[in-house]
Amino acid sequence: MAKVIPLTDARAVRTASVHAVATPHVTPTGLLADTRGRVLRDLRISVTDRCNFRCVYCMPKDVYGHDYPFLPHADLLSFEEIARLARVFKAHGVEKIRLTGGEPLLRKNLEHLIAMLADIGGLDLTLTTNGAALAAKAVALKKSSLTRITVSLDALDDGVFRAMNDVDFPVAKVLEGIDAAAAAGLAPIKINMVVKRGVNEREILPMARYFKCSGHILRFIEYMDVGHTNGWRMDDVVPSAEVVRMIGSEFPLAPVDANYTGEVAERWRYLDGSGEIGVISSVTQAFCSDCTRARLATDGKLYTCLFATTGYDLRALLRGGSSDAEIGNYVAAIWLQRADRYSEIRSENTVALPKIEMSYIGG
Ligand code: SAM
Image (cartoon, rainbow, N blue to C red):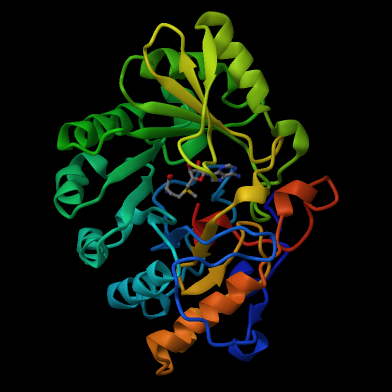
């Protein structure tokens, strides 16, 4: 039976008009704190809403079929527009930019954008990819000054992985991409595995065994109720504590301090010195209280939470003749009034609230 999309188009969910936000003059000092004292430090930019995978928990085929109305190219922010916004955000304190999507490596000439962002200077530039095109692009990405890379891989078993990506994509090609990225010098590489109960939990140990000693950091992500198309239920979540227990029973682990405040992954090291893993407990241990992330969707709408329902249209400002100072004021006003903490209040009752799909807002 075909799935019903509860919203006609998640991308149209409540766009705040530019005037809905008070815009006092805020001189950029590199330190903007919201109503809960959280400073703006990270910006995730979705460079395309398209993906070549149809992961069943993210872009299920019965919703994202051949006739799905992806955004027309003219609606996407251009590289120049993204770089301009990156400068504005950097002035307000952003230190790290993650390019994502959809699948960011599908955006043509992405390395040109990375080079433009690198020219701004002082930004940690990273990217999250499904790895399908990584073997071909790793060297160009490194040359364009990408700092690091995160590769998503949900299983080592080919049958499980092909069923999850739903386009019959083999594990071997992703592993090839990871090797190419390491050879190009994009290390340390992070590998993200979303764990869904009954689907790939038996892949936890094989993944841990494979990446132990590789120098790459394997991170287990709790399956989240992003968007409306994945039919999320709390029962589908494998708590991080269970993952740590499972791996720790084969390879003893000890907790490690966070690298910095607001780091989403909780770190654990193998006691035999062969590396570390991370767990991202977005569901069982919400980390809203030190969330420093803003998200720029593919069409230039700004969201202050993965679970936000209101986007702020920066593209309208960019294309309407606003100056950098005006855009900066607007961004500051949005951040200063930010109060969201969805993961802290998540329950079976919040699942039905309007939400934006991850492929559009950026994972
Ligand atoms: N296409 C790129 C990729 O595969 O990494 C970037 C976009 S993808 C949306 C970013 C990350 O979000 C992936 O690691 C994906 O597994 C994760 N993700 C997608 N839906 C999720 C969900 N419902 N819960 C947890 N993680 C999810």
